[in-house]
Image: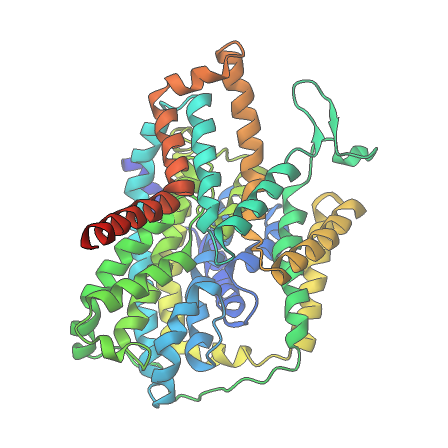
Length: 501
């Protein structure tokens, strides 16, 4: 415990790390306010540039991008009715109407306070929940990890708004991508087509840059000349005492909801914000205000989406299961820097782990100050013409991919997956399930192979392990539960109708 507290406190005593967090918070807010970028795209763009950093500093930078960009999406959501990130979509429901009434500063003040509180609560939960879960994870063997990974893949059904079937198709495509390269036991070549640069499989970094950054560039190219309505404001206003009385229950509730949703594998801030907003409306005494400028709606969405950032780091660091699209990129960063996700990370790298947690805490405090005193300046960044912004994104994507291995193949991978991501989005598929499927596919294969070795090839022995059965049952319920519930309720309604006849 002393070592953990010492590591948390060391963040404040490390001037270079503080400078990195400060600079990255600014970058994260800039990325967050630019419609079309967001935390995931920003993390994908910065990932190659963190490879030469100290591991702790690198992951701290990516985590800071995550929390600050998630908050910053609310600025444009309120001022121009365009969420900078998908996690801020629910904020537009009441943020923009409140701004249209001339209360943009008040709306942003509510968003800043709610975001900061939700983020800090989630980091505190992360500090306590992650080590406890790590102790449980020590009992996991390959059969349990295999079943857990299957559960993580089943959660892809609800990772985004693309629809369960399309999300699962994307996840399966990602799992197939993970098989490219030489099979690790037999060295049989799979889908390499004679290109021996693919012997060790697809490199995660260029795939992530292509799926998130390059595909977004292609999507946004259709909106180059789109005009937006910008609402001016004098300054951000701190919530009044009456405002605090009205929103404190909502903020507490949504912070808890967001943290819990974030901990679930493959969920994230977007899902959390929607549920946080819905629950705020459900429990509100002023339901009629929602959609017309309710501060409870803003507080519910913003505290939930920022709380999800800390929650999503729990399965990412403890189990190696990404809690969101952005944490999939952070997971890649952990692996590239030799910080093996899992329970051993909390035993062998305690100082590094808690320095990362401390960095997230400091980042939340920093974006509180910047949100209160510089939101008006940051809002102006959203007016940068697309003709200037997206060539810069393209250049950063290509440079970042090439810098990794100095390989032209990586540039081709970025371009190919940029087109794949663009086509996927065009036909209603989300790209996050593809990325998560690519990461989890390796885990599925490795743990299944190790399980078969343990049981001498008798795969059904996996079902004799209680924890493995538990996760497989959860996966089944996650996939088939809604349909079974509909069938059960339909049957009960038909029975009642039969009796009434």
